Amino acid sequence: MKGKETMFPKARIPYGTWGSSYFPAWQTSALAEVNIGQFAGEAMNKILGMRKVPKSELEYLIIGSTIPWHWKFWNAPLVASCLGERIPGYHIEQACATGLQAILLAASEIEGGSYNVVSVLTFDRTSDSPVGVFPERRTYRRTEVLADVWDNFGFDPATGNSMIKTAGISARKYKIDREEVDDITFHRYQQYYDTKNSGWFENILVPFDVLNNQGRFLGRIDDDNGVRQISRSTLREMRELDTCITPGSQTHASDGMATLLVTGVEEAKALSLQSEIGIQFVGKLEVRTLPSLMPEAPALAVKKLLNRTGLTMNDMAVVKNHNPFAVNDAIFAKVLDYDWHKMNTTGSSLVWGHPQGPTLTRIVIEALEEAVSLGGGYALVFGCAAGDVGIAAILKVTDEGSAK
Image 1 (cartoon, helix red, strand yellow):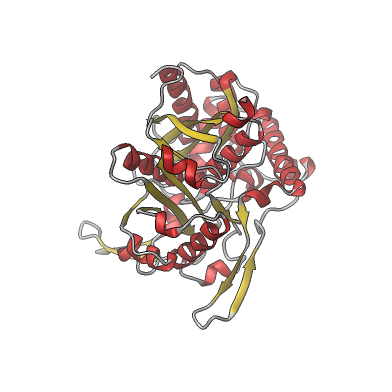
Image 2 (cartoon, rainbow, N blue to C red):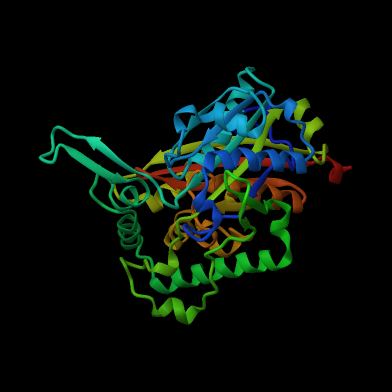
Protein backbone atom coordinates (compact mmCIF):
# COMPACT_ATOMS: atom_id res chain seq x y z
CA MET A 1 0.00 0.00 0.00
CA LYS A 2 1.57 3.31 -1.05
CA GLY A 3 0.37 6.88 -1.18
CA LYS A 4 -3.17 7.14 -2.50
CA GLU A 5 -4.18 3.50 -2.10
CA THR A 6 -6.80 2.80 0.55
CA MET A 7 -7.44 -0.09 2.88
CA PHE A 8 -11.20 -0.28 2.27
CA PRO A 9 -11.88 1.51 -1.06
CA LYS A 10 -15.63 0.80 -0.90
CA ALA A 11 -16.10 2.11 2.66
CA ARG A 12 -16.71 5.66 3.84
CA ILE A 13 -17.65 7.46 7.05
CA PRO A 14 -20.45 9.92 6.24
CA TYR A 15 -19.54 13.28 7.71
CA GLY A 16 -21.41 14.40 10.80
CA THR A 17 -23.39 11.20 11.40
CA TRP A 18 -21.59 10.81 14.70
CA GLY A 19 -21.81 11.85 18.29
CA SER A 20 -20.57 11.08 21.77
CA SER A 21 -21.77 11.61 25.28
CA TYR A 22 -19.61 13.53 27.67
CA PHE A 23 -17.41 11.22 29.76
CA PRO A 24 -18.11 11.80 33.46
CA ALA A 25 -15.60 10.19 35.82
CA TRP A 26 -16.68 7.04 37.59
CA GLN A 27 -19.27 7.50 40.37
CA THR A 28 -19.75 11.21 39.54
CA SER A 29 -22.93 11.13 37.47
CA ALA A 30 -26.28 9.46 36.88
CA LEU A 31 -24.61 7.04 34.44
CA ALA A 32 -23.47 5.09 37.49
CA GLU A 33 -27.13 4.23 38.11
CA VAL A 34 -28.24 2.86 34.72
CA ASN A 35 -27.80 -0.09 32.38
CA ILE A 36 -25.11 1.33 30.10
CA GLY A 37 -26.17 -0.80 27.10
CA GLN A 38 -29.74 0.46 27.31
CA PHE A 39 -28.54 4.04 27.76
CA ALA A 40 -26.19 3.76 24.78
CA GLY A 41 -28.94 2.47 22.48
CA GLU A 42 -31.31 5.25 23.50
CA ALA A 43 -28.52 7.84 23.23
CA MET A 44 -27.69 6.67 19.71
CA ASN A 45 -31.37 7.07 18.83
CA LYS A 46 -31.20 10.72 19.89
CA ILE A 47 -27.94 11.35 18.02
CA LEU A 48 -29.28 9.88 14.77
CA GLY A 49 -32.34 12.09 15.10
CA MET A 50 -30.19 15.17 15.63
CA ARG A 51 -28.07 14.24 12.57
CA LYS A 52 -31.22 13.62 10.48
CA VAL A 53 -30.27 10.01 9.74
CA PRO A 54 -33.34 7.80 9.08
CA LYS A 55 -33.04 4.74 11.30
CA SER A 56 -34.59 2.71 8.50
CA GLU A 57 -31.25 3.05 6.68
CA LEU A 58 -29.41 1.00 9.34
CA GLU A 59 -28.69 -2.57 8.31
CA TYR A 60 -26.24 -3.84 10.92
CA LEU A 61 -24.87 -2.95 14.34
CA ILE A 62 -21.36 -3.48 15.72
CA ILE A 63 -21.14 -3.08 19.49
CA GLY A 64 -17.87 -2.34 21.24
CA SER A 65 -17.62 -2.65 25.03
CA THR A 66 -15.23 -4.23 27.51
CA ILE A 67 -16.97 -4.33 30.90
CA PRO A 68 -19.76 -6.86 31.56
CA TRP A 69 -23.18 -5.25 31.85
CA HIS A 70 -26.59 -6.61 32.76
CA TRP A 71 -28.03 -8.76 29.93
CA LYS A 72 -24.80 -8.55 27.94
CA PHE A 73 -25.49 -12.07 26.61
CA TRP A 74 -28.23 -10.57 24.38
CA ASN A 75 -25.92 -7.78 23.31
CA ALA A 76 -26.47 -6.19 19.86
CA PRO A 77 -30.11 -7.34 19.46
CA LEU A 78 -30.98 -5.91 22.88
CA VAL A 79 -29.17 -2.63 22.26
CA ALA A 80 -30.80 -2.37 18.82
CA SER A 81 -34.19 -2.76 20.50
CA CYS A 82 -33.32 0.16 22.80
CA LEU A 83 -32.37 2.05 19.65
CA GLY A 84 -35.82 1.24 18.30
CA GLU A 85 -34.72 -0.95 15.39
CA ARG A 86 -34.74 -4.72 14.93
CA ILE A 87 -31.39 -5.15 13.21
CA PRO A 88 -28.75 -7.85 13.74
CA GLY A 89 -25.20 -7.32 14.89
CA TYR A 90 -22.42 -8.55 17.10
CA HIS A 91 -20.09 -7.52 19.91
CA ILE A 92 -16.32 -7.05 19.89
CA GLU A 93 -13.75 -6.00 22.43
CA GLN A 94 -10.02 -5.40 22.48
CA ALA A 95 -9.46 -3.58 25.74
CA CYS A 96 -8.61 0.09 25.10
CA ALA A 97 -8.40 -0.43 21.31
CA THR A 98 -12.08 -1.44 21.13
CA GLY A 99 -13.38 1.90 19.87
CA LEU A 100 -11.10 1.98 16.83
CA GLN A 101 -11.31 -1.73 16.12
CA ALA A 102 -15.13 -1.59 15.97
CA ILE A 103 -14.94 1.11 13.29
CA LEU A 104 -12.45 -0.90 11.25
CA LEU A 105 -14.62 -4.02 11.48
CA ALA A 106 -17.60 -2.02 10.26
CA ALA A 107 -15.54 -0.94 7.25
CA SER A 108 -14.68 -4.57 6.53
CA GLU A 109 -18.39 -5.44 6.53
CA ILE A 110 -18.95 -2.73 3.91
CA GLU A 111 -15.92 -3.78 1.88
CA GLY A 112 -17.06 -7.39 1.82
CA GLY A 113 -20.42 -6.38 0.39
CA SER A 114 -22.54 -7.72 3.23
CA TYR A 115 -24.12 -4.36 4.07
CA ASN A 116 -24.30 -0.79 2.81
CA VAL A 117 -24.86 0.96 6.17
CA VAL A 118 -23.29 -0.30 9.39
CA SER A 119 -23.78 1.50 12.69
CA VAL A 120 -20.99 1.45 15.28
CA LEU A 121 -21.89 1.90 18.93
CA THR A 122 -19.29 1.76 21.69
CA PHE A 123 -19.85 2.22 25.41
CA ASP A 124 -18.69 1.24 28.88
CA ARG A 125 -19.45 2.01 32.49
CA THR A 126 -16.56 1.75 34.93
CA SER A 127 -18.80 2.84 37.81
CA ASP A 128 -19.80 -0.09 40.03
CA SER A 129 -18.15 -2.50 37.61
CA PRO A 130 -19.16 -6.11 38.27
CA VAL A 131 -17.24 -8.63 40.31
CA GLY A 132 -16.95 -12.16 38.91
CA VAL A 133 -16.43 -15.41 40.76
CA PHE A 134 -14.54 -17.97 38.69
CA PRO A 135 -14.13 -21.69 39.47
CA GLU A 136 -10.38 -22.45 39.52
CA ARG A 137 -9.68 -26.04 40.50
CA ARG A 138 -5.93 -25.50 40.26
CA THR A 139 -5.94 -23.01 43.13
CA TYR A 140 -6.16 -23.87 46.79
CA ARG A 141 -9.21 -21.63 47.21
CA ARG A 142 -11.02 -23.41 44.35
CA THR A 143 -12.54 -20.05 43.32
CA GLU A 144 -11.08 -16.71 42.27
CA VAL A 145 -12.81 -13.34 42.56
CA LEU A 146 -12.12 -10.62 39.98
CA ALA A 147 -13.21 -6.97 40.13
CA ASP A 148 -13.41 -6.41 36.41
CA VAL A 149 -11.98 -2.87 36.08
CA TRP A 150 -9.61 -2.52 38.97
CA ASP A 151 -8.09 -6.00 39.02
CA ASN A 152 -7.47 -6.00 35.27
CA PHE A 153 -5.73 -2.64 35.40
CA GLY A 154 -3.80 -3.63 38.47
CA PHE A 155 -2.52 -7.01 37.31
CA ASP A 156 -1.41 -8.42 33.97
CA PRO A 157 -1.63 -12.21 34.44
CA ALA A 158 1.07 -12.73 31.79
CA THR A 159 3.65 -10.55 33.56
CA GLY A 160 2.35 -9.87 37.07
CA ASN A 161 2.74 -6.12 36.51
CA SER A 162 0.17 -3.33 36.68
CA MET A 163 -0.58 -0.79 33.96
CA ILE A 164 1.23 1.89 35.98
CA LYS A 165 4.27 -0.37 36.17
CA THR A 166 4.42 -0.63 32.37
CA ALA A 167 4.52 3.16 32.18
CA GLY A 168 7.35 3.35 34.69
CA ILE A 169 9.37 0.64 32.94
CA SER A 170 8.89 2.36 29.58
CA ALA A 171 9.89 5.74 31.02
CA ARG A 172 13.16 4.23 32.28
CA LYS A 173 13.85 2.52 28.96
CA TYR A 174 13.50 5.77 27.02
CA LYS A 175 15.10 7.92 29.75
CA ILE A 176 12.05 10.13 29.96
CA ASP A 177 12.39 13.19 32.17
CA ARG A 178 9.75 13.92 34.85
CA GLU A 179 9.74 17.60 33.93
CA GLU A 180 8.82 16.78 30.33
CA VAL A 181 5.99 14.50 31.47
CA ASP A 182 4.57 17.26 33.66
CA ASP A 183 4.91 19.76 30.81
CA ILE A 184 3.04 17.42 28.46
CA THR A 185 0.29 16.95 31.03
CA PHE A 186 -0.11 20.68 31.61
CA HIS A 187 -0.19 21.34 27.87
CA ARG A 188 -2.86 18.66 27.28
CA TYR A 189 -5.08 20.28 29.91
CA GLN A 190 -4.59 23.67 28.29
CA GLN A 191 -5.57 22.20 24.91
CA TYR A 192 -8.71 20.68 26.40
CA TYR A 193 -9.83 23.84 28.19
CA ASP A 194 -9.08 26.06 25.19
CA THR A 195 -11.24 23.78 23.05
CA LYS A 196 -14.00 23.60 25.63
CA ASN A 197 -14.11 27.35 26.12
CA SER A 198 -14.33 27.87 22.35
CA GLY A 199 -17.53 25.80 22.19
CA TRP A 200 -15.98 23.38 19.69
CA PHE A 201 -17.02 20.28 21.63
CA GLU A 202 -20.66 21.15 21.00
CA ASN A 203 -20.14 19.89 17.43
CA ILE A 204 -19.68 16.32 18.64
CA LEU A 205 -20.62 15.97 22.32
CA VAL A 206 -24.31 15.59 23.11
CA PRO A 207 -25.91 16.24 26.52
CA PHE A 208 -28.35 13.64 27.82
CA ASP A 209 -30.98 13.54 30.54
CA VAL A 210 -30.85 10.23 32.39
CA LEU A 211 -34.06 8.68 33.70
CA ASN A 212 -34.67 5.64 35.89
CA ASN A 213 -37.02 2.77 35.00
CA GLN A 214 -39.97 4.75 36.35
CA GLY A 215 -39.11 7.68 34.11
CA ARG A 216 -37.89 9.86 36.96
CA PHE A 217 -35.04 12.26 36.34
CA LEU A 218 -31.69 11.06 37.71
CA GLY A 219 -29.39 13.69 36.28
CA ARG A 220 -28.05 15.45 33.21
CA ILE A 221 -24.83 14.36 31.51
CA ASP A 222 -23.51 17.61 30.06
CA ASP A 223 -19.86 17.78 31.11
CA ASP A 224 -16.72 15.69 31.40
CA ASN A 225 -17.09 15.55 35.17
CA GLY A 226 -13.81 14.79 36.91
CA VAL A 227 -11.63 17.02 34.76
CA ARG A 228 -9.94 19.45 37.11
CA GLN A 229 -7.92 22.60 36.67
CA ILE A 230 -4.21 21.94 37.24
CA SER A 231 -1.05 24.00 37.33
CA ARG A 232 2.60 23.22 36.81
CA SER A 233 3.25 23.71 40.52
CA THR A 234 0.56 21.23 41.59
CA LEU A 235 1.93 18.70 39.11
CA ARG A 236 5.47 19.18 40.45
CA GLU A 237 4.25 18.56 44.00
CA MET A 238 2.65 15.18 43.22
CA ARG A 239 4.58 12.14 44.34
CA GLU A 240 5.73 9.57 41.81
CA LEU A 241 3.84 6.30 41.84
CA ASP A 242 6.53 4.96 39.49
CA THR A 243 9.19 6.61 37.35
CA CYS A 244 7.65 9.84 35.98
CA ILE A 245 4.12 8.61 36.79
CA THR A 246 1.96 10.65 39.16
CA PRO A 247 -1.79 10.82 39.81
CA GLY A 248 -1.88 13.93 37.62
CA SER A 249 -0.09 12.50 34.58
CA GLN A 250 -2.43 9.56 34.03
CA THR A 251 -6.06 9.28 32.95
CA HIS A 252 -9.04 8.37 35.11
CA ALA A 253 -11.86 5.83 34.76
CA SER A 254 -15.14 7.19 33.41
CA ASP A 255 -18.48 6.29 31.82
CA GLY A 256 -19.84 7.06 28.37
CA MET A 257 -20.79 6.15 24.80
CA ALA A 258 -19.86 7.16 21.26
CA THR A 259 -21.30 6.27 17.87
CA LEU A 260 -20.80 6.76 14.14
CA LEU A 261 -21.79 5.20 10.81
CA VAL A 262 -19.71 3.41 8.19
CA THR A 263 -21.29 3.11 4.74
CA GLY A 264 -20.73 2.60 1.05
CA VAL A 265 -19.71 5.49 -1.20
CA GLU A 266 -23.18 6.45 -2.44
CA GLU A 267 -24.78 5.97 0.97
CA ALA A 268 -22.19 8.29 2.50
CA LYS A 269 -23.13 11.05 0.06
CA ALA A 270 -26.80 10.60 0.85
CA LEU A 271 -26.43 10.52 4.64
CA SER A 272 -23.58 12.99 5.17
CA LEU A 273 -24.40 16.39 6.60
CA GLN A 274 -22.08 17.77 3.90
CA SER A 275 -22.05 15.48 0.87
CA GLU A 276 -18.92 17.07 -0.60
CA ILE A 277 -16.83 15.76 2.32
CA GLY A 278 -15.36 12.29 1.85
CA ILE A 279 -13.75 10.20 4.60
CA GLN A 280 -11.76 7.14 3.55
CA PHE A 281 -9.78 4.43 5.32
CA VAL A 282 -6.11 4.53 4.33
CA GLY A 283 -4.53 1.88 6.53
CA LYS A 284 -4.42 0.15 9.89
CA LEU A 285 -1.79 -1.78 11.79
CA GLU A 286 -1.18 -3.38 15.18
CA VAL A 287 2.02 -4.42 16.89
CA ARG A 288 2.85 -6.23 20.10
CA THR A 289 5.96 -5.14 21.89
CA LEU A 290 7.98 -6.82 24.65
CA PRO A 291 6.35 -7.54 28.03
CA SER A 292 5.43 -4.56 30.22
CA LEU A 293 6.29 -1.94 27.58
CA MET A 294 2.74 -1.01 26.64
CA PRO A 295 3.35 2.78 26.29
CA GLU A 296 5.85 2.25 23.47
CA ALA A 297 3.57 -0.07 21.44
CA PRO A 298 1.45 2.70 19.83
CA ALA A 299 4.56 4.53 18.63
CA LEU A 300 5.90 1.34 17.08
CA ALA A 301 2.53 0.71 15.41
CA VAL A 302 2.53 4.21 13.90
CA LYS A 303 6.10 3.86 12.68
CA LYS A 304 5.33 0.57 10.96
CA LEU A 305 2.07 1.91 9.47
CA LEU A 306 3.84 4.93 7.98
CA ASN A 307 6.39 2.62 6.39
CA ARG A 308 3.58 0.48 4.94
CA THR A 309 1.66 3.41 3.50
CA GLY A 310 4.63 5.44 2.30
CA LEU A 311 3.40 8.43 4.30
CA THR A 312 5.28 10.50 6.88
CA MET A 313 4.35 12.45 9.97
CA ASN A 314 4.66 15.61 7.89
CA ASP A 315 1.75 14.34 5.78
CA MET A 316 -0.57 14.23 8.80
CA ALA A 317 -3.01 17.11 9.23
CA VAL A 318 -4.31 15.74 12.55
CA VAL A 319 -2.55 13.52 15.09
CA LYS A 320 -4.55 12.19 18.04
CA ASN A 321 -4.07 9.31 20.44
CA HIS A 322 -5.41 7.51 23.46
CA ASN A 323 -2.79 8.40 26.05
CA PRO A 324 -3.55 6.84 29.43
CA PHE A 325 -0.17 8.18 30.57
CA ALA A 326 1.55 11.39 29.52
CA VAL A 327 4.66 9.26 29.16
CA ASN A 328 3.02 7.69 26.07
CA ASP A 329 3.32 11.03 24.29
CA ALA A 330 6.91 11.55 25.41
CA ILE A 331 7.88 8.16 24.01
CA PHE A 332 5.98 8.79 20.78
CA ALA A 333 7.83 12.08 20.32
CA LYS A 334 11.16 10.29 20.67
CA VAL A 335 10.37 7.31 18.45
CA LEU A 336 8.83 9.39 15.64
CA ASP A 337 10.99 12.51 16.15
CA TYR A 338 7.79 14.51 16.43
CA ASP A 339 6.88 17.61 18.42
CA TRP A 340 4.28 16.56 20.98
CA HIS A 341 2.91 20.12 21.08
CA LYS A 342 1.43 19.55 17.59
CA MET A 343 -0.77 16.57 18.54
CA ASN A 344 -4.03 16.26 20.50
CA THR A 345 -4.87 19.88 19.80
CA THR A 346 -8.46 19.47 21.06
CA GLY A 347 -7.49 17.49 24.15
CA SER A 348 -7.17 13.76 24.77
CA SER A 349 -8.21 10.86 26.98
CA LEU A 350 -5.38 11.73 29.38
CA VAL A 351 -7.59 14.67 30.38
CA TRP A 352 -11.22 13.75 29.76
CA GLY A 353 -11.04 10.18 30.96
CA HIS A 354 -11.15 6.59 29.84
CA PRO A 355 -14.38 4.56 29.73
CA GLN A 356 -12.44 1.97 27.65
CA GLY A 357 -14.88 0.90 24.92
CA PRO A 358 -15.79 4.34 23.51
CA THR A 359 -12.48 6.10 24.20
CA LEU A 360 -10.93 5.70 20.76
CA THR A 361 -14.29 6.21 19.06
CA ARG A 362 -14.52 9.68 20.56
CA ILE A 363 -10.90 10.29 19.55
CA VAL A 364 -11.69 9.28 15.95
CA ILE A 365 -14.71 11.59 15.91
CA GLU A 366 -12.64 14.49 17.26
CA ALA A 367 -9.88 13.80 14.73
CA LEU A 368 -12.28 13.75 11.77
CA GLU A 369 -14.10 16.88 12.89
CA GLU A 370 -10.78 18.65 13.28
CA ALA A 371 -9.56 17.50 9.85
CA VAL A 372 -12.76 18.82 8.27
CA SER A 373 -12.26 22.19 9.99
CA LEU A 374 -8.76 22.32 8.48
CA GLY A 375 -10.09 21.70 4.98
CA GLY A 376 -9.17 18.01 4.84
CA GLY A 377 -6.05 15.89 5.02
CA TYR A 378 -4.77 12.76 6.71
CA ALA A 379 -5.84 11.98 10.28
CA LEU A 380 -3.64 9.65 12.32
CA VAL A 381 -5.31 7.96 15.29
CA PHE A 382 -3.56 5.50 17.59
CA GLY A 383 -3.49 4.06 21.10
CA CYS A 384 -2.53 1.17 23.32
CA ALA A 385 -4.36 -1.94 24.48
CA ALA A 386 -3.89 -4.63 27.09
CA GLY A 387 -1.11 -7.10 26.47
CA ASP A 388 1.45 -4.51 25.28
CA VAL A 389 -0.43 -3.98 22.03
CA GLY A 390 -0.47 -0.80 19.97
CA ILE A 391 -3.01 0.04 17.26
CA ALA A 392 -2.83 2.80 14.65
CA ALA A 393 -5.00 3.88 11.73
CA ILE A 394 -4.90 6.59 9.10
CA LEU A 395 -8.04 8.12 7.60
CA LYS A 396 -8.21 10.66 4.80
CA VAL A 397 -10.64 13.56 4.72
CA THR A 398 -11.27 15.26 1.39
CA ASP A 399 -13.36 18.35 0.83
CA GLU A 400 -14.32 18.51 -2.84
CA GLY A 401 -16.30 21.67 -2.20
CA SER A 402 -13.21 23.55 -1.06
CA ALA A 403 -11.26 22.35 -4.08
CA LYS A 404 -13.73 23.85 -6.55
